[in-house]
Structure formats: structure tokens, C-alpha cells
Length: 463
Ligand code: ADP
Ligand code: MG
Image (cartoon, rainbow, N blue to C red; front, side, top):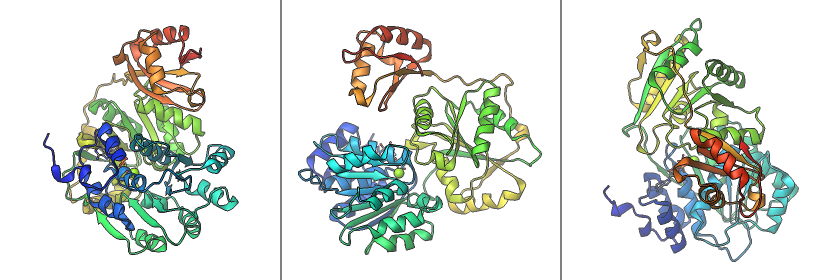
């Protein structure tokens, strides 16, 4: 690896605590969008930043926000709006990581699906950075539990999706609550025309920075299949899975019903798949996403909205069961794979009437679309996809002050499990999930049920 001295974070005027966090996180070099936007943000400019999904936009605004934060007061320093709960949670988690070396930073998420009175209480006790979805943030503004008078930096993340999802009215209303004097940041993966007019409504002399995606070498192999309405799509899906054997896949569908149907089809073929769509309760979503992330689940069938902002590492393939409704949305979807320099696969079904969509994509990516005949797919009848991990449930979580280290300690200590057998750990409020290698899950459950975590007994079982 060559060290690019030009793009080290240390050349920026970042406070030492942030440099320390960055070095702990192993962020050596700035990503291109960070390199372009951070100096402007640190100087206090209003900024519009556009770069593709997975390019490190969160840390770009996150570092800017944390760098100017004064923790000696309890005032609200910054509000970040995200289009979905998952995305807000991810931004919060990235900001918590970045602020680890900074003592006493109070970060709160304000999203639907979580009790409002708990949020009221936290807001009352003082929050530095609030991260929320438009609906819930607006609710708090209306009833006065959230006040933006002291706000220094306002950030709109994934602005393109916000508009796609129809949040325009809520955004306008939130904007009307912003103080006149503030710094404002707008981040987006794409730059459709309506973003400029949105920016004008709350930004002043905004500087625009952009990382051109179209000339970049793509490490995603994209293949398109023409499927006529009479052909059996599920069967082709099965053949694709069986011939390319990806370990982890997201299948994108257009409707909730379609996600359920596709997941059912796969389950009938003994391939464990789960769907996420707007019908799921928050805790069901958390469970599915945690299992997909920790490799206990190999196939996720999702609508665009439900999959928004997911940053699952090492996703090997994305399958577009339907063509997305525009070239930008297509880029978004396939951007879930081939991240961080890894190879990715993207398969897309289009019906004969949708060929124009391929041209839109070609115009944007400046690449020819490779169309293959689904009949030529070579595959095995006997195909299965068994996730390498299983998820263990523990009846204790944040409310019991359990941390990842406590669980790891209990498992590797008293329960005598090997470090290599343990995968991702997710800690929720009332419970936790731990991924364990499939063949050792029973042993791990048995041993931990007999043991203790932080000197307390918890129920342990298969999630
Ligand atoms: P975006 O918002 O542009 O889609 P994210 O902010 O989610 O992208 O970042 C994608 C991934 O890159 C995250 O896992 C993040 O932790 C990582 N990342 C961000 N900045 C850096 C950096 N400078 N060096 C290494 N990894 C980084
Ligand atoms: Mg982002």
C-alpha cells in the first residue's frame, strides 16, 4: 500500500481527539469526497456535496460537525436529517465511532418507531447532535420538545432520496424552523435537478463539490436479462443464484407483495431468504437486518425504500428483480455491492418494453449494457445456500448496560468459546444478538446459559 501524504487527515485543522479516533478506526487517507468537502466544511462554508454511495460522505459531514462542537455547553449544535430510520441509525453509529475520543458528546436519534417520550426526556437533558427522519423531527419541532435556536450546523443527508420519497413538504416545514445564521450542508449520491432548488431554500452561497462517478473504473460486473412477462422470473432468479453462487445477496423488488412472494419462492426451494418492506415492525426490521449483517441470513429481498442506506460489507451480488424507475436509482441499488474495492455482481431483469431504461443507464455510466439470454444460464438443480453463522439471542441489552466486550468476555472466558467462532454482536435495548459459527451454536448456547454476563444470569437461546 502506498501512503498518499497529500490526503492525510492530519493536514486538516482537525482537533486531536478526532485525529485519534480516525487513527483508531484505521482511516488513513481521505476518500475523494472527504478531500474535497472537508476543508470547506471546516472553514464554515455552506456546502453541497455529491458522490456515489459508499464514498464516505457520513464522515465528511460528521467530522465537520464534531470538529466545531463545544461540549462544555448542552446546546443543540447540529441536526442531521436522513430519509430512513436505518440510515439515521447508521449515521449515528458512524458519528459515535468518530467521537469516541471526545468525551461527553451527546448524540440522539429521532425516528419514528421509537417511543417519543423517551426522546422528549433525552432532548430535555441536553443533546449536541440530533439525527432524525423528517416526520419525527417535525413532530418534535411542532410540540416544542426540539428547539433549533442554538443550532450551528444543519445537514441534509441523502437529499436525492428525501425528494424521491416525497419528503419535500416536511423539509420545507423543518427549514422554516431553522435559525437564520447557521452553516448548512447537503449531501447526495446523485444530483437531479430538483436538488438545486431545494438547496436554495436553506443554503447561502453554497459551494458545490462533486466526485464524478461516470469515469471511474467500476468493479461491478453488470448483466441484464430480458425477461418477457410470460417467462418464469423466479426460475431465472434461482438459476442465477445457482450459477453464480454469491454468498450474500440483496434482491430488489418493486412492491411489498413482490418481496413476500419472492422470499416465499426461495423458502420453498429451501433457500433461506427474508424480506424487508414497510410492513415490518421496527424490531422485526432490526432482527432481519442484524441477521443479514452478521451472516445468519444470506438473502434479503427488499424494496428500495427499505434497503436505503444499508452499508453491509462484502455483499457479493445485487439482483434487480425489476428495473428500478430511473438510472440514478439503478446506480444506487448496485452500489450496495462492489464496495471498498471489492468485486461485485449486479443482475437485472428487464421486460422488452423497458429497453429504454438500459439506454438511460448507458448514458449515465458511459458503459455498454451486457445483455445475456437467461436460457443460456448453466446451473445445478441441487443448489443450496447455507449461511455460515447462526444468531444467538441474549435477554440483556443496553438497558442492562451490556457492552460488546462483556459478551465477548463471557463467551471466550467462562463459556470457553474460541474467538474465531464469534461473529458480529448487535446490542439492542432489551436484548442482544451474537453471531456464532453454525456448527458451534448449540455448544455456545449451552455454555453461556450456564454462565453469567457482568455477574448476571440471562436467558440465552437461538434467535
Ligand atoms: P456514503 O454515505 O457515501 O454512502 P458511508 O459514509 O456510509 O458512505 O461510508 C462507507 C464506508 O466507508 C463506511 O463503512 C465507512 O466507515 C467507511 N469510510 C468512510 N471514510 C473512510 C476513510 N477515510 N477511510 C476508510 N474507510 C472510510
Ligand atoms: Mg450516506
